[in-house]
Structure formats: C-alpha cells, structure tokens
Length: 226
Image (cartoon, rainbow, N blue to C red; front, side, top):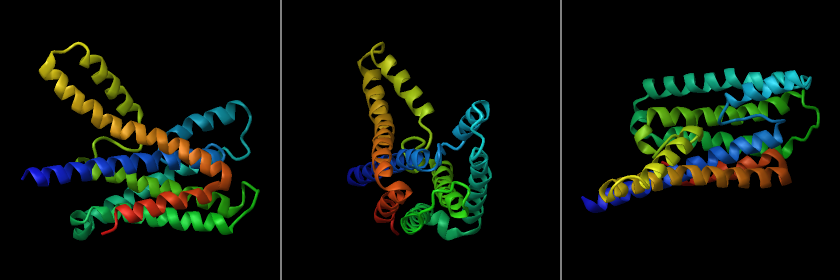
C-alpha cells in the first residue's frame, strides 16, 4: 500500500511538472513566434488585442481574436470525446497523447513552411494548432483534476495560493507548518516548471521559430504514451 501511494505521488508530481513546463513553453513560443499570441492562457489575448487597438497596431491583431473560438472548439471536442468514448475515460493519457501529436505535427509544419507574411494562411493555422493543442490540456486539467497537483496552464491562482501558504507558514504552529510545507512544495512543482518552460520556450523559439514546439510534443508522447 505504501509503495503504491509512493508511485502514485511520483506520477502525480511528474505529470504536474511536465504539463506546467509544456504550458509555459508553448505560451512563450507563440508569444514570440506568432506576434504576441498566448496559446495556453488564451484570455490574455484580449489584453494584447486591446493594446494593439489602442496603439493602432491593428494589422494582425484580429488573429488574436481567432484564438478564442479555436480554444472553445478544442474544449467542445475534448468534452465530446471524453463523454462519448469509454476508452478516454479509462485511459486518460490519450488526451495528452493527442496534444503531443498535434504539437509535433505543428512543429514539423513550421520547419518546412517559411513565409514572412503574417496574413498567409499557414501563418495563421500553425499558431492556432498550438492553441487547439493547449485547449486539450486545459480540458484535461478540468476533467482529470486529481491527476495534477494544481492547474497547469494558468499560473495566477497557483502563485496566489503559494504565497498565501508561505505567509501562513510563518504564522502557524508546528503541526500546521508541516501541512503547509507540503502544500508549498506541491505548488512549487507547478509554478517553477512553468517558469522554466517560459525561459526554454523563449530561448529556443527565438533561435528556430515555432518549429520549437516539436520538442514539447516529443516530450508529451514519450511521457504520456499508453
């Protein structure tokens, strides 16, 4: 029983670390490689769109609005897939395997396709495929919340909780401190990998463009294969 719990904890922690890293990586990659587009935290695109409009940089800002219906379609797709397919409910990593496959396909497409025109069809489709893939991860976090330590795609709530727990840690007695220590460590397993993913995604995408997402796609398939 103890061994089973230990193995489950390792799996829970590893899944949380990898998914957080992937989300941070993907978000930064599309922000750098697709004119300020967020792929994991899509509501952030509303802020960027408003900024573009106010600063009169509207030439390609409408593309950011496309990300929202693409994201919604990804959530609908995930919901129907999970609700109508018993195999997806039993083998939850299938959704992550689809995400990894999409990221690899997107990365390969970006390798063979180079065009500086932001309005070119594939320059819109390629980033939206990443948005769709991260939509699957957002859905995964909702349907299979017990498989991760905390949400892996949006860090604001996690950072808030982390520093609430840190603040409480210095105010509570020893017994409560032990519980808070565990919570702080668990939150760190999500927040810090996300930050690391942002750095890695930014550096690699700066060098090779959106084809960089192929690396996180391979990582996903390797770790979450059935």
